[in-house]
Length: 260
Image (cartoon, rainbow, N blue to C red; front, side):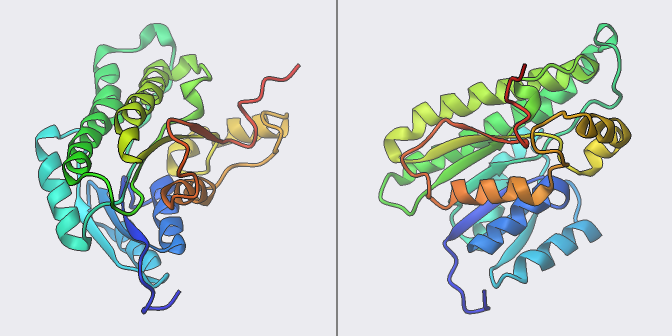
């Protein structure tokens, strides 16, 4: 793309400064979206992501965003839309894992509540805030969508991080609920379930995952990369699946396939 390229929309990616969020932001830009990234800090990682977005000839912006802070959601959306125009796609990517993997019988209420605040409660109400704006603006706009990033743990039980699994399973129902509510406006709501993706979040268990992948964890015997998730998100946001909604897309190398 060149600097003269006209964008096809405006994507807002939470947790967009690195990892899967960066992969999504860059693939959205490659597809032709202007991209705003929301994250806790504007650091060197954020600058690198913004530069990568702009390299595709589209506009980029950073907006401070703590998805767990519900009172700030309206202000965040205002800043995002003031920066690059009306949002056409929200990607709820920001999320955390457990602070420490361990026995399910040792999981604490504090850990459970923190996972729910960031992975479920925050995205649910941020989506609600944007959905209200979508409804107020009515139909007749360019394609609009919401993409929720959950996890293979939406269906695969990992007892060493049970509260994470519970939070991501709830994201699946959140997707279906908003898909049902917003379908009359032609707004697509989707869930992407990444498998084992190479990020700082999975780095703590990299050696274990290396062994499992080599032993046949998934039919495609490799790590997933952030851009794999990004390509799926960009395709959904572009309207290529405009008569689909409420679907869960597995980006996991076939990990979800039950095998004998």
